Image (cartoon, rainbow, N blue to C red; front, side, top):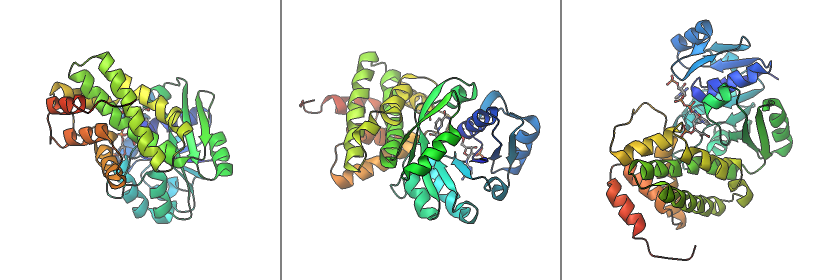
Length: 321
Ligand SMILES: NC(=O)C1=CN([C@@H]2O[C@H](COP(=O)(O)OP(=O)(O)OC[C@H]3O[C@@H](n4cnc5c(N)ncnc54)[C@H](OP(=O)(O)O)[C@@H]3O)[C@@H](O)[C@H]2O)C=CC1
Ligand SMILES: O=C(CO)COP(=O)(O)O
């Protein structure tokens, strides 16, 4: 089955490389014609995924209509860009299997990837690929396990088969809500974990933050219809652990810089920043307590200082676990 990847960033390029290494023909779409031409001739994406060669079976193009002819399309653009991309290119994309790879919630609509896909492209088969996996690890061929969530389990099984490789192992679920909320919320907690470490609060405080963050993830996700086992799986707990404990994570590094009072490159993709605000809004509407997400949203907007955020969290009333 031919596969198309829309978005030639770190993750899109890594997925294209991993699938092409298994002999798959992969079309990779970069929106900028100059960048597409450079990748196609140089066979490298030095800006987003340095040091990785593109296999011969990857062809890079800025023509979305040609890449979109593939049966399966992976949408590897940042969350806040996904709705615009789908609406702009609906004619080319509707009716395909469209697999969201972004980890976040759209700030304007409060929706996750599969709902955004379903609304923009009503004839598409919406799915999501998520779980603990750094682009650089995938590109190096290191073993990774991810979650493929599709509401239509029969189509999900086809996609699972088409996108798995011996080292990229996909587990399957029909719980799209749980899979996408796990991936979105763990980025918010990872920013908070970075703040804790950057502010010098220590490993014990990070473990406490991760645990309370996981409780918070469950509270919102279950209220929105997710299954508890999805949150405990790769797309929730698994990715929470990875992202809160690795300096490879951009969300963690962004939080670390906040905690230390250092600057951070604004061109870096940090999905948890907008998503913190999106989930705070979702939770507020439902009366759900999300102190960590609220704190991250306020820090991102510079409405509070790190010292104020820490003392607010520590001053919360003592309660049952
Ligand atoms: N990197 C990782 O390890 C992983 C990332 N993800 C998820 O994948 C998603 C993408 O992240 P990642 O690839 O790392 O991000 P990058 O910052 O590396 O790349 C983002 C890419 O999206 C492109 N892009 C941005 N806006 C648009 C648009 N409107 N239309 C078309 N293309 C656009 C950018 O193009 P341009 O260069 O022209 O700006 C760039 O190629 C995120 O949601 C992230 O959470 C998931 C798992 C792992
Ligand atoms: O989602 C990821 C790993 O699973 C990548 O995390 P960052 O976006 O924080 O780099």
